[in-house]
Image 1: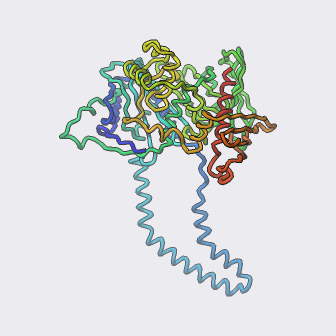
Image 2: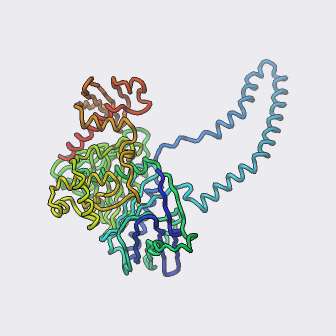
Image 3: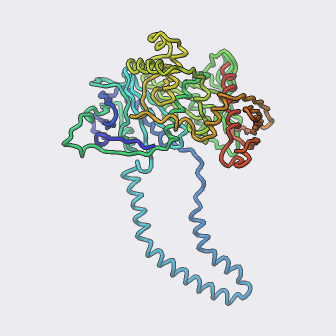
Length: 553
């Protein structure tokens, strides 16, 4: 999906002995939004914005070992190996021939290196230049900044699309706020800014500016503007939408002391697992300290400072725990961490309370299962069908107030809270509204300048779309059988007009499909080479919804 930006120059950072100035260049193609003020909470902001940068550059996808050099060496010496093996027929003649071949090969390689040397040198210099002077060509940073009447917040996504970060700053974080205008914009952001953030000190004044002068278009100074076209994958945009949908779902909530997060990070640093399951198991009992078990070692952390205040007992497992190391920089400045769990194998949100700042870390079910694939959290969210006229009134009300709860909008428009929540959920899935878990309000946030093609982004493949239709229109039944090795057998039936399908899956302790079978034509033709069929996805979505509701009881 192609996005066009027109930045008013480049984002700049100036630093002197007593002043640091950050001037973010906004996207002038969007409706104007700006902010000018001086930082008050300097150290907390530095650590939080650095953690946000850690989200952007995070990439925990499996990277196979690079064997290209070894394969090249084998290819170069294959003739020698074969000659040595055949040398037994006539050792003297073979050795002489080998020496001749070695000399010829050495001569050929010398000529090749001489010819290719300028190319390799230029290639190496080019990549070194990019890394030192234009690191954005290596790392795509994608911040979205939103200015509201009560706070300013940044949002970003990790490279592997499994981690979401949001930094919110209320206006006590700033002093001498000169001017601001509410809205959402993209800002020109380079990797070099991270190094400049590290120079923020408590004894130096720090000016923070989303440059308002960028929106004063001067036709005589067109060279000051920088046109940027970024072709973002659909999965990136879809991941953002799925995060918004996941945040609207009901969660199990509890608090952790910063030292509890430190204890988890310490164990993750000290030990490296060689086998599964690689999960965090939260054991929650009303009136008792939260217990965290790190598998497969079975190491238990009793969070004595954090007592679970819920009404019922829960035991929930989450995966992709290495991503929690992003929170390390916040431990020293955080007052507490609020954890929101959707259920076993489902997303989790960690909100760091930094006083006048808040940092939200959203993690998908596990690292390999990123936000944009096989999530479909909008399918798990119960949504009332709402008339278009009511949707428009709800959105107009939110445009006027910028933030509100569903009951507040319902009271204003004299509609039911269910209708207001249904309309807000629809706009959330379209990327025009975000649910703020920290404040428990809906906020206006236009992800893009133009409306997103929701029909194109709703599903990542045809099977997911068919699975959604099955859940809406057909009868789905399933049964779960727990096995001894922490895995489970999920079987079910999907009844259509003409036939009843019988999918089944073996899911291991890490919530991954080990084996699966279905009697539909898609599975018979493709097995699992192209992913699970729509009937497997349907029974798993139905199971996830039931498990989430059971965890909340």
